[in-house]
Length: 44
Image (cartoon, rainbow, N blue to C red; front, side, top):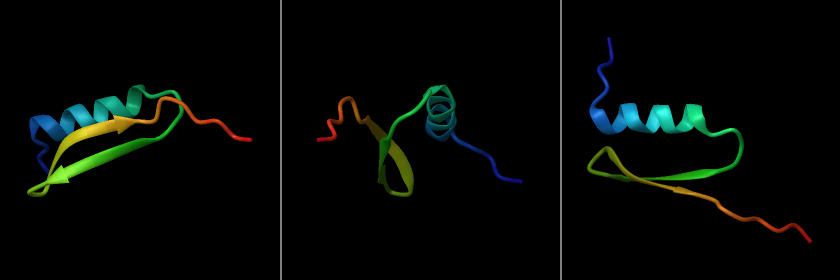
């Protein structure tokens, strides 16, 4: 059984709430520390 810590739980909830798009997960010491969400993309 895998037990998630608080940051991992928050990451899963964030992913589930995104309707569409891209995110970038920053990991330090095997833990997610920050998520960057792509706000704007322009295709020419």
